[in-house]
Length: 257
Image 1 (spheres, rainbow, N blue to C red):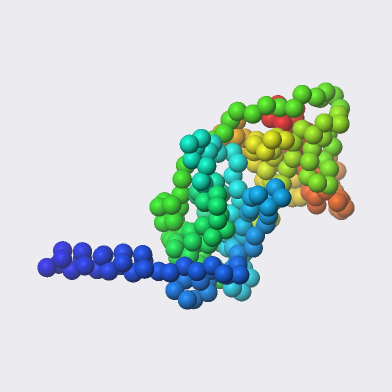
Image 2: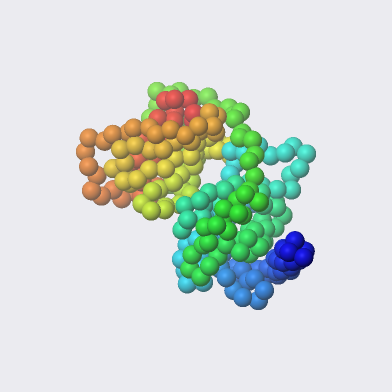
């Protein structure tokens, strides 16, 4: 009888979870009629791709979802795209596959069915369960071609986030967020393949940066010591333009970009 009772409870819980109804309308996620969170959509590549920020109903940032182009897509299946989700309050990160058609709704369904939102924060145990049950470990893209150019020319960062050298566009960069004093960026070659992720603290006075390169599939810390402290630097390119230019120079010098 005890085993039968346990089985019955488990079945009831499974039915209850599967019966939950997730609705997404006007950027609001609702579960069984109760609003739980709101989604901010950031369109990229002329609207062809999207990144997402998830907020509690009171405006606390909960999740940063960024398209991850460093992962190889299945050549026989173009119905999904890989996203890296950073769960801000719990400092957890997972890779998930969202549908190419309807990625916004797919993100909302993933969040709603995962039941991870609790008021103005996230349930760390449920986030871990979501990563374990729905997360994926795709292969990393490692093959890309560098633009042919004269490396003796200075590197220039432009307002549209492109990177030029000797009059040739050699890549571009994008900001992926700011969490607990740490700024995060991704660097790409011109055809859109992500070649490096970087993060650093200290803004334009950063002394080092954490680097992940898709080609090597490793993380390491690179020193970029500065002799003079920067008190203020106004730039229409990016608030961290000085540090970004030094990181870009390092990537070029080491044949990543």
